[in-house]
Image (tube, rainbow, N blue to C red):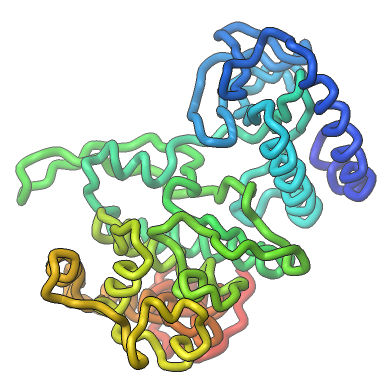
Length: 389
């Protein structure tokens, strides 16, 4: 079904999701001989699904299933990405929620102007929910990894950051929180690159030619009126209000963006940890003490003692945090005004209190983005700024 149909039949299509996925459960009950033990669909290159989608290659794999590159013979043989969900009930239910989000986004953005991946179609195949998307390229993380974690240049970070803020603003305007923003979920439309010789390092580096990106993976996206899970976000990009179980909303996405942009700038993760108390210790090392108001409200008092984080800097873990983390602005790579603007924006995104954290619309007005908005003009940043871009 095309984008025009998606817009006009949104509500009816949601009812169809429930009916079709219910039927897929019945299909799944039978042994169709195409499922691996862990629920993945068994396929080979050249297989054709629904007399339409010809599988060319596997693009990736996750807990949900696999993503394959296909020729869509229903669209003139154009290449698309097909997300094939595992034949397990909990993943089918999650897919139903993701489709409802993607339908809403298609309805609100029929001309694909808001930097979110576009769903083209969906169907059920022997118990596997399959969702087709426009074919994109490498994720911003995979490109960084392939480039030996050489950071992106600041002008490229600026363009990517503006698009990410634009996409997240679009989600929030439509009462959605993504909840799983990370470099792996931001994909380049085209990841062709040029080789640039680095005189200082005496080696060549990859420089992406086109920094146009799309936000992907809406499997955890949550509408404002829906149940909000206690734990969300991949650990390294998880906001403090989530760790402290204080409730969360749109601002948790902005915290994740701040972590992502730092990673683009330095080439490594800001919070490299797998433990909540250590995570909080890293935050304090980078951004100062957790506010008393948040400490007093949290049920996670096991992390604190007498109103302060219960953390011993003399332990092995304490020395690790002290070595790995430093105040945010000590990570500046240059004293240039653009770098200071960038770190001012990061500090506002990494504000502890969600109510004080900068919003995407205000972030898009920050002086860091001036070269994109008004080339050559100076600008004084204001607390609120309405800019339609």
